[in-house]
Length: 254
Image (cartoon, rainbow, N blue to C red; front, side, top):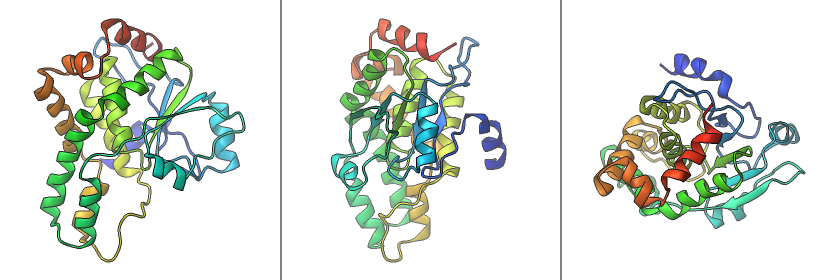
């Protein structure tokens, strides 16, 4: 599946030396038969190790805003290396409750793979429900800049970025199966993380590093349970009006 999936979405990939999970959110089909517009919103892992060539690539894409979902500590430890044109950076950093405890449990070998997987499912539910202010901030930033090219990123470009981009794509009408598939691409474009120590169980580490469709589906189901429907989550959880959604679709969908 990985070869076929990556081949199908290869035109969307942005090749960078200092980042491995960068891609365009354009080209995805919507439920009304249209497609998302290329060159408007990109998603990525951390931008802290970009080379001069990478910076030139981003400048060539016209990126003028960066939405960094990492925490302040993460940003200080590994600041973005952006083009000299210095795109506007908006920090909406967050991390789900229980994240530090999960890594401690895995590193100490006290958490089994089964417990770790359950923790990841719970974390995804918290990502979509506990951080609505940060997520809404990203979407309002996109609205304010009226479709100017932007990139949304965190550390690995999988969890926080995965939720932010999935919600955005669903909000503008992208087919749900395609949204899930876009998320799963991150499973095969992994960035090394320095949060594991000692000899933690390989299967537990794999659950943490995975971009499993089940994780994203758990988050979406949680939003629907909490608000009655995904549309209600957009309206009442994120505070996005019908006009906001129309405006997002106006510049994100051809």
